Amino acid sequence: MAADLAEIERMIEAALPGASVAVADETGTGDHLRATVSAPQFEGLPRIAQHRLVKAAVKERFDDGTIHALSVKTELPG
Amino acid sequence: MSVADAELKQKIEELIAANPVLLFMKGTPEAPRCGFSMRVVQVLDSLDVEYGAIDVLPVLQPLREVTAEISDWQTFPQLYVNGELLGGADIVEEMFDSGELAEALGAEQPETVAPAAAAPPAQSPPLQIE
Image (cartoon, rainbow over all chains, first blue to last red; front, side, top):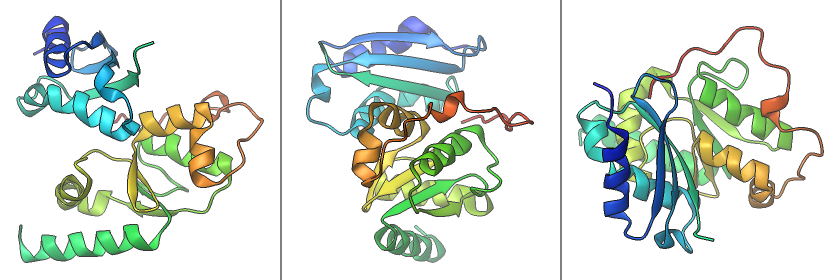
């Protein structure tokens, strides 16, 4: 089943209050997504830790098989 | 965790400690079996750094469990620098583009175009579902 992009965005926003999040379907199949996330919580963290935060936020959708791949791009709020 | 997995974990921790730059990948640097692994190999080669490479495919599932414990990360490739997980293909490419990777590896940033713009392989890499 294709992921609900808006739901994925909400899950990331809920885990990272104050974040701005954009989730796109990379392949048109609804299971390979790309998330661009800008969050104040990223300050001072190495990228790998920033990515862990994003992936942890949507873990439930990985575990239930909705998402197969999530490319992540993280930014610090300008 | 089974005895076999505990032994594997110890072996992996020793390898990470012994190799300043270590890549866990699908396939080998000469014959990557996954597009994401190939991209990391291209980046490392373009920086001309020495690195160890481990083909995860023969022990994929046990290695996923072991790396999940060691560094809270289950997908491959994984690039370790000085004992720490730096990232997978996304992070490695992003840090390469910004010059941070060359700095972290003590390498010279090449003046040539990024590897993504280099000649594509004759055959497309196997589709990676992960």
